[in-house]
Amino acid sequence: MAILVTGGLGFIGSHTVIELLSSGYEVVIADNLSNSEISVLDKLKKLSNKTIAFYEIDVTDKDKLELIFLNHEIDGIIHFAGYKAVGESVVNPLSYYYNNLMSTISLAELASKYDVESFVFSSSATVYGDNVSPFKEDMPLLERTNPYGETKAMSERILSDYSKTEPTKKITLLRYFNPIGAHESGLIGEVPKGIPNNLMPYITQVASGKREKLFIFGNDYDTPDGTGVRDYIHVVDLARGHVAALKKAKQGINIYNLGTGIGVSVLELIHTFIEVNQVDIPYEIVERRPGDIAVSYADTSKAERELGFKTVKTVEDMVRDAWRFEKNLIK
Ligand code: NAD
Ligand code: UDP
Image (cartoon, rainbow, N blue to C red):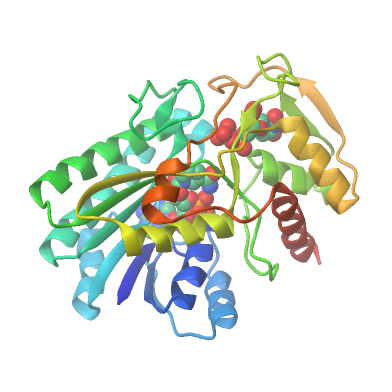
C-alpha cells in the first residue's frame, strides 16, 4: 500500500511518515522544500531503516505531480503541503490561496483519474472560528479572520463537493488543534524559518537564548488566568491519528477533530516547560494579537468512537520533547 505524503518533510508530515512506515505502509513523499530541509529525508530513512521515494516538486504543478501516479501505485494521499503562517497570509493572500487551493485541486483531480481510494486532508481548528469550545465536528463553521483559515475552509468545501461526485472514495478532513512537541529521538521536530509565529517554538527559542523573552499576547481574556487557552496535541499522537484515519475512514466524507480535549493556557504551558526542563523563560505581557480567540479545545469523542483514536502523550511529554529537539539544533 503506497501512500503519497505531500509536505512529508515538514513538521507534521515527517512525523506521520515515521508512523506510516512503522505500520507497514510504503511512502512516497512530494515536497518542494519551501518550508523544510532535504536533510530531514535522511533522518527519516535513519529512523525507519526503510526506503522512501522522494520527489522534489511543487504539488500545484499537476503535470509533474502526475509522474508520481505513473511511477507508483498510489492507494492513499495525505495532503500536508501548504503554507501555514496566519500573519503572512494577510500580507500575501494570493500566494496562500494559490498554493493551498491549487495543491488540493490538482491532487483531487489526480486522485480521481488514478482511482485513489483514500484522501486525508490537513485542516485546522481555525475553521470553527469563534465558536464556543469544545468544538464539535457538526458545529456550523464561523467566519475566519484571515486568508490562511479561509484556505482551509475552502479546501474542506472543495473536497466535500469532490466526495459527492465519487461517493465510493474515502475522504477525510482532519481538524488539528495545536500540534507541538517532537519525535522522541530528538532528530525531527519543528524548525520555523525566521521569527516563530506559534507559541511553542517561540518558547524553545527563548529557552535556548536565541530570543530574549516571550511576549504573551494578552492576559485579559475570559479564561482562568486571563491568557489564551488552546488544545495542545503531541505531534506524534497527531501523526498516529493519520494512520487511524487511513485505516478506519468510511466511504464518503469523514470529518474528525484531532486534539486532546484539554484546554491549557499560555501561562500553564510556560510554567510546565520551566518545571519539566528546569530552564527559565522570561516573558512580558503585551497587547492581544488581532484575530486570536480566547479558548479553543476539541470535543474528541467522535475520533475516539469512530477511529479508536485517543492521545497518550501529556503536556509534560510535549515540552520535554520540544526542548530536546531544540537543544539538538543548537549543538
Ligand atoms: P510545514 O510547513 O512544516 O510543512 C509543510 C510542508 O509542505 C513543508 O515541508 C513545505 O516545504 C511543503 N510545501 C508547501 N507548499 C508546497 C507545495 N506547493 N508543493 C510541495 N510542497 C509544499 O507545516 P506543518 O506544521 O507540518 O503543517 C502541515 C499541514 O498541516 C499544513 O497544511 C498546515 O496548514 C496544517 N496545519 C498545521 C497546523 C500547525 O499548527 N502546525 C495546525 C493546523 C493545520
Ligand atoms: N501566543 C503568545 N505569544 C506568542 C505566540 C502565541 O502569547 O509569541 C499565544 C496566542 O495568543 C494563543 C496561544 O499562544 O493564545 C497559541 O498561539 P499559537 O500561535 O501557537 O496558536 P493558534 O493561535 O494558532 O491557536
